[in-house]
Image (cartoon, rainbow, N blue to C red; front, side):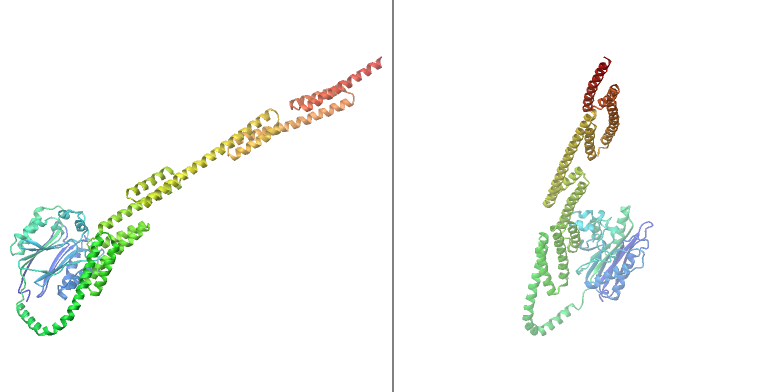
Length: 593
């Protein structure tokens, strides 16, 4: 009876331009007690273009099997559509945006996943409208993107909820919205709202007649008049609620209800006192829970996550006691956000900045489930941990360069780390950079002192070697080959310690010359000894002339050898020869006389 005694008129258009295949789909079912309207936009860009149709068919089938407009059933219809895409026999992942509208011809409720839009117009004004589940709308809420730039923003189709998600599928489900006569409902896909703004759409509905097809044609003409270059496929549906259902038994039901109430009033009065006490207790718990919920949000906004955690746990305990599923879920999401932030902060306090960055990244994702609350604080911490990591990365690179003795480049990296740490007021990082610089300068000083000591030692060794070499040359020049050999050997040892191959070669040549001289001297000494023996033999035989000859030959050799002691000895022997020869001549003269 509801459908027959109400007037819901529906019209739509769904087209694609050029050779593009239409991947949108619209369908609806109007039963006696409930009606279901479904619009889907395929976003998988596949030639088969089956995502939207699969989704709409799944919803219509699920609704037809169990018509309802309860929140639970609407979520079931959305899950059926999501499951249909996930289990489809397709080579690629299927994805789509969707809006489902349910009505009992008196009220409506809608569920959304993606960026298809719904607008409910009443008396020329928007009574209800959806919000895209996209990154662009997150940026609008953060006031990073103006509302009037949404249609051209590059992230408008970057969705965080859509059909085809295996995990984190969180569609939006509205509360029940009471309808009135002459309400008008619009459902349309992205190619409509990207080219027709809200003001123009509002004007079209304000001037509309009671025929939805005329309005659909007007919107399509307006779209085509723009001649958008990138227009692909589009779908627009209008549902005119010319008359809602009015229950004819409403007054009778009220009278029967009053009669029943009068009959049970006495019993209710007795039970009422007890129920009132329980009610007041429950209301007090509800008030405490709601206050804890509010305090949780306020403490998060104040960046006091420890106090927010306390309030959130207390409120969650009350929600569990009250069996308030909605608050249990919402408080659970807040608690997950708080715990993620506190865990990340603990990692940050302990100096585990990479773990902290990952933790704050997880917290950023969690904030989406609680209306992006705390996002400024989390983004600030993400930026801070990134800077901290950069400081330590520069110090680590400096350490590596210092190990490779690239001290100038190492100093540059340490100074970069110090400057960045000072800029972000990172005392720990600045101290680490200063310590690294001081160690670098100390290492450089130690190295220079060691090099200076080594150089001094080398100079000392070179000077000592040069002195020994000079002394050897002097001894050699004087014919003192034994001393020359000792000096040359000492000099050779010095230059071997210095690893001076050139000087070693020179000294080895000098030692060879000394050895040659020593060999020659030995031979001459032997020859001189022979002459001395021959001279002595001649002297003993009285051949003083022969003895003098051999002494003179020995004298020449010893003179060449600078053997002064031998020369003196020969002089004495020759003097003895002169005396003996004189005696011999005197004896001979005496005999002749």
